[in-house]
Image 1 (tube, each protein chain N blue to C red):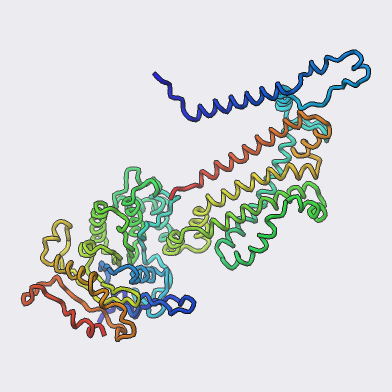
Image 2: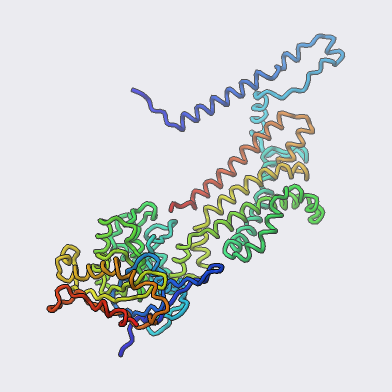
Length: 304
Length: 278
């Protein structure tokens, strides 16, 4: 069997104990994989370690146990092969939008001439709709949506093998979020970029991703399920809500976040020692079972 | 129709009025020379009516200023040089000592800002050395360096180093983690991270330290030159005091203030150019 592009094995992150206390285990035995070109979202409550997983993938943090193999090599430390879009945009405020993108491009292609760097950067800014003078403004003179567009342009412009998005739309208003989500889909379909994204927004996850990883609550959080989004692409925000699979998937996710993420949490020391998360496909037609409850009662043993 | 006067013009007008009021009061408070000259024959003969030394009126100071500034660079020997020459000596010492200090303070500030270990190791030294009055170093400097001019420069060096060192360390240590992460995810080496991310991020704080330092250096040079003598605006003030020429003393005090203001304005300009809005 061919190895997946990214393989996360037994990933565990513990923080050292405060004086007299026990070490804090944020999450443990996370096992999942990502295929090339796949768009994967991860959802879970605050404190379940989503951001820590992302930081480990980015190379900014190191796991306590386990590891990640990407393209046959183990991840250790940050790399231009993994581009990151942070929630707070993380643009350098003393550089214009264009120069922020050029900063990335120059780091990626130190041998390029200035003209090449500018042309490449402008191309990606154009892709996110920043043209006509806006590219020469400093981040402080741009709206939140514009700033996140610049950040996305910078990440795509370095053409990483894996793009990491840490709640990229979390700080944006709903309308702007919708527009940029549409742009993200468009760019993603054109580039076949592998994307791993953190989100809190169930609808956003369904709209964007091929697969959604669900995490139980921390501490001792685990990646419990991998939900396949069986909705055909290209997807339109206005249309997918009429897809019969949409609400099945949505209900499944909401149900997980509202109830089961808590029930399954904190199961420290149980047989939760690895194995891939249970794959569920709530969106698939199931003639026998209208409400189609995926084998929830069996889940405990399935994970074990 | 009402005329809208901008706030700045109003402030300028008020400043001028205050200045005129102050100079007027000063002028009136000083007994006029004519009055002093109206002495009886007897008083003149005994010399008992020799005019008491007074603070000169502003008109006299302005007259002096016009005379001095119309020929600022004349040089009639060691005790009679133009104000421009004296100020140039002082500026030369201040800028030499100051930039030598910057050359040391900014790299070391970078180091202790980036490394908590160095910060902790060097902090006791900084805390002990910083509160020492720069003039206290003067005897030691004169003994070790054996040159009064270089000693003055050393005193400027030692007094301007601390604000730059501390502000640089503070600015570097407080660069937002996100920007460091941007550098890391772009695989920037430590040198390029320092120059392309940390330096611009810390530049406003560093420039604040540099601006404080140049202000202190300009304060200290006057005192230092009073001690070392020879040349410079500080020496000039003291020399004119010894000549009992209070007009020149007041004139040079004003010149010290004006040059200090220009130095500060220059650094404020540089500071604004590296300032960024988050």
